[in-house]
Length: 173
Image 1 (cartoon, rainbow, N blue to C red):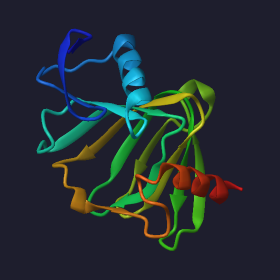
Image 2: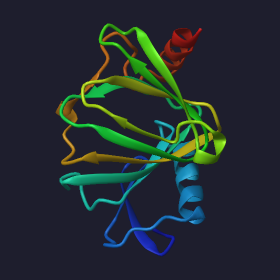
Image 3: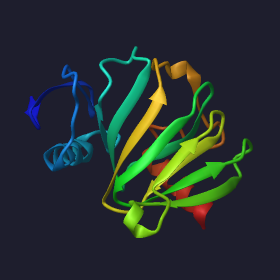
Image 4: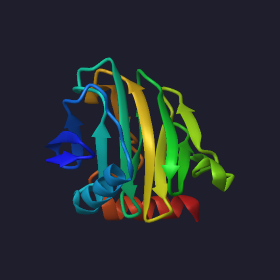
């Protein structure tokens, strides 16, 4: 499929790569990713600006819908950066034992909320989306290796959406 002048390939539900060397995004791309997120099992969609999971640097334009459960997890070997473009969410930081340690209100710069973070490696974190969608840029060192991330043993797993959303609500009560 072609969006915003780039040929896209969906490699997993909601995960799109392009063979373009120069990757851009515009309102048309964001609208496409919102539609893709709404139909994805995870309620998320992303444009990967890097050429493959093996790339040394991963830069992704991500759209996450309100009903998505971003399970508490941590990256064992790398940090990640997060820059909000549109929408609002709370970044939730947890201690190793599952105690909610901090809530960071996230939104675009003009909202007065934090619009950027750099998450250190080894820190459990999750995301609660407050708007219909949040659109953000996420960057991390590659290559992608699922064994370098850990889902929190004290929270519902990433595919347990209903239980996970109840868990996040309970943490915030």
